[in-house]
Image 1 (tube, protein in one colour):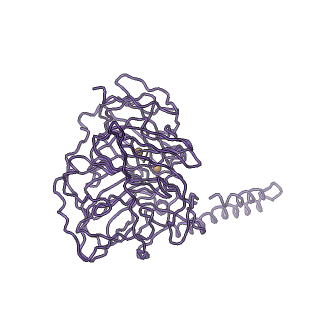
Image 2 (spheres, protein in one colour):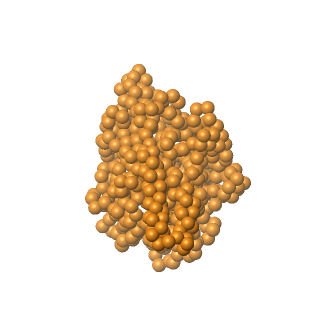
Image 3 (spheres, protein in one colour):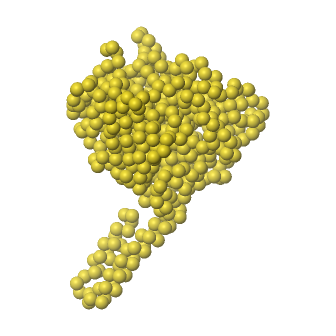
Length: 528
Ligand code: C2O
Ligand code: CU
Ligand code: CU
């Protein structure tokens, strides 16, 4: 409400001692009235305008862009080497408009990376931006020094080459910058990409898996544009969660359609937005199968007609189409919990969007039915939990403190199972993301988790006033001086300090003060 600051100041100055008592009181009353009425009227106006929907308004005129698969090279040791370069560029995000954007190996977003369980990978990330950044592998189990959090900075002109062995089930992960205080801006400008992991089980399952044909990544992001076509980075006057855009891009394409040539298609949905949550479904309410969440494939497909994703979350769904039909993937009003009536509108709870039109060809190749059994879950066992850690989310803090890169907030012994209890004490939605691991939701707002939260996760929405209990295990890598992060993945909250650091240590080992550039992590797994 900065715009009203000057009115308030002038009004207060007029309230001088020269006024007589009754005049003073009248004036004071008027001042109070004006002070209350103007902002209230303005807030009401903003409130009425804040509801955003494009439902029924899109033409679906542009072919959905599919991020190219990045072919790795192989070094003598058999390591798969992926080359990524962050740079500035210009993109036509809106038809006929040039927008300055950032991307990996191109002007916007990045290529899709793909690797299999057991692969040794090396990422060579060079920075051709005018600013320091980092690249984090969201959802990846890896040494802390390879994690790409705020400590692993890459200065302009420099290259960072972390390496690790993929050791987790098939899943749809993603990568994005994690620069302290700058994550929102760097991701919003376009730095994000999908990282697909395969494993022997996923290779043999009869699921749609031909990339770009019947297996399609969908990076969903909301944007706001200035008149001149540039991305707007104003924070929004009232929003308690950061800016919410009024335009939706999928893989950087506005107004997109996707041609389908098979009877079933697998959509890998990634909410790559800064603050907006989506409740995905189809315009005709058709059912689809949820087959995977953040951490990978479920035990069995779950039929449903909505899947809600908060920022950072992923879901893989398989949907069936009839020859020649068109159906719209839509985001319905998300359920963000008990946000008060006023704030609900400013956190996007009243918003809905058409996202993408699926257009089936007149002749479709028959896809096999979705297997009834997917994959056994490698879940931590809650009965082995050795303790409970509590996290209390405030409006901008966790456990009453804001992020401090030199402070380790939690020290976790390796190879132990723990319960983490996360309570949202603010009146606005937050979510909670933990690096390096996948967790299982034990209890969600006092209830057992719904099917959509039944698999392994790395990010989960924490509704206002509610508590979510998860069971989590950190295995393999220890490093007492290089922390991993836990944080709210609403990026403005993360940037403003809603983040904490944990180190994974050998039993009995103490945390050390984090070093700016962590030495390569000590690989506990390779010692045994
Ligand atoms: Cu997707 Cu710590 O981030
Ligand atoms: Cu992450
Ligand atoms: Cu938050």
